[in-house]
Image 1 (spheres, rainbow, N blue to C red):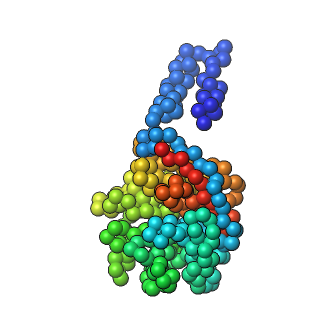
Image 2: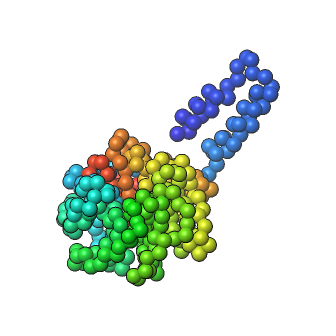
Image 3: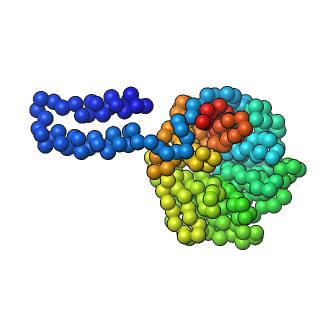
Length: 307
């Protein structure tokens, strides 16, 4: 990365015989902040950018898999499989159960859904969004125990649950966020643009936005949105690392690391064209990052050398 950046800057800055003093000064003024950005520490909480090495990939039978979530208590990965169009109420959607070594333990662990997308686990229950409702599944029994309708929703995407048990969901199609407290559903009074990934974090919410290509933090108490990082094409899934940084998957087959001072670094970029990198999760005890591939119908696991 540094060699490529240096070559670009060198080519831009190299003066010709016709360069005036004023032009040279303009070049220097332009170059100075670029050099600062190039060599300044990113303060991501990681001492170096982690290396990602492909470890395993599941069979390609997780049809249009949009989300993956690791549940430490059960020790399994769970996937949300749309199995069709994300707005079709066709009863074809499913949740699969996958081992941490990539074996599909139960392909149709829960079936009969329409287009499940986001996943979150809270107190032994798996939450998943499904177009205009949120399903709650008992993990031990593998059964659907409750469905909460959100009639105003256009196309629900991700879901997260706060430590207090408040459920939050992003409505990408309706440019809205909803909170579910018991039986009460409320739309949050916030201006958002194609909200996608959502994570309950430090009393607020981490949120990726598809069109603005950014990662934000929502201060729920103040009702404000703080931009943490920009320039993330088709920002999708979000994962908060213990080291203080965040991963954001990008539909083009990338994963970005977002750190302090709005720093954004490319962590993974070689997944292949057209893969459709959806949500990302992490198994800390194995140092294994797992990415759902929407168009490849699989999970890919990467050994990540986080210092």
